Amino acid sequence: MIIKKSELINKKYKIVICGSGPAGVSLALELEKKNIECLIIEAGDEFYSDFAQKRYEGKVLGNFPQDISITRLSQFGGTTGHWGGTCRTLDDYDFSEWPIKKKDLDPYLKKSCEILEIPNVFRERNINENLKIIEFQESDVRFYEKYFEHITKSKLIHLCLNCSIYNILMENNAVKKIIIDGEKNFSIETNFLVLACGGIENSRLLLWFREHNKNISKKLPIGNYWMEHPFKKIGSGVGNFKLIRKKLKNEFEKFENFRNWGNFTVSISPTQKLIKDNNILNSSIFLTLHDRDNDNLKNNIKDLLCVAPNLSNKIIKLFNKNLLCGITISSSWEQEATFNNKITLSSSKDSTGIPKTKLEYEISTNTIKTAQEMINQIGLFFVNHDLGRIGGDPEIYKLNSFISEAGYHHIGGTRMGKNKSNSVVDENLKVHETENLFVCGSSTFTSGGHANPTLSIVQLSLKLADHLKGKIRAV
Amino acid sequence: MYKKFINLRRRNFNKLISINIMNLLSFNILFFKGVFPFSKKQKKPKLKWILDEKDK
Image (cartoon, rainbow over the protein chains, first blue to last red):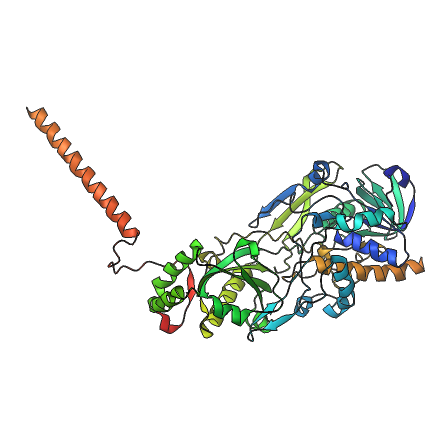
């Protein structure tokens, strides 16, 4: 049900969830199924408003520019209001530094897929020992469209819009009250507080809370180890349309006309062996075939024949048989968790009086090494099976000229771990050395993998609901 | 008379220069457009191609 802000004064809830994005709403829905009441407070409105969105403004420093005021949405449903909907689970080997493993999240996969309305199928098939074709799923779910009405009718989920958390009051390492909208007299008592405000806001709020609460340890690396998923076109090629389709055709391809680049796209990822042997990052390649009318095809042929004159006859034959196609290769990468890639508090403040975000981020040098290795591996695969020829874009051979698009996946900052010196929350998403302060969302990921994070965010929320259920009984 | 002579020479010189520049430009345009395929000068490829030894 919808609760007005005035109705919240001096009220007490067992669980308060800050944020109504996929993390917060999935948690609330699961708690409702367990017959547990909770309150969601959302700083934004039912729909987009410039006023709420303005709180997301901040400063970005480093070699990975992105506008953090537009990459996320401050409204009910959060960034699912404009997300792409691509979903995939993290790989087993992405969890090597996590305090939990993939098998700990697997029990929540089926329910998470139901929430996102996607099939619970994430197949992969090795095409050789170094490369595998992987399956993504595409979700059309906008959390506002799917869950807002349900929540307004729910007796157990209370929702207060245009209500932003300003600070917390702690006693003996436990959150006792949360202060709303900067008004000291306006507080809500709670047994458990869950921050589910997104991959940047979770860090910003925790940093701000720490300035006023000695109970949150200064040693915790809040805001550090922040990550993204860079995205870039990294190569091109020419090939035999029929042979490539035959060799890479799979029953789980989902990207028809990917980015309007072509009519067949296949997603390829490195195997664990390739990652380990070459010390590269996990990544996903999108290999798209386009037709012979595309200008790039002519340029690619000209470029190839400069260095491979003996291929002329073969290309002319393919052209005459109408089998010649152009190939575009793009990639997104995992990034290493680096201490110095961080969120800190800026000197200027937002409308509620909380300092704005300052984000410092340098793209990993391993990104171009990974791009080069993947182009090399796919190129060799094409040579070995005589499918065509692949070439790497010049930018992937020089870090200085490597400018990537952002994947708009905000990961880390309140990472999960057992060691308090390099993590902020434990395996149950509880902030170290606190009793009842939890964080949920991609900010808790210990490493980023290459997969889009939303599915894993929902899995973590459902796992947290199970944990909170056990805790609530003890209250 | 001397001045006239100088002007004439300058006009001819300017004319000569302009023709040469035009020739040079058009030659370059034709050359880079690939109209002279008999040129043995090989262009540097933009992409770094993964090739078989037999391709070269």
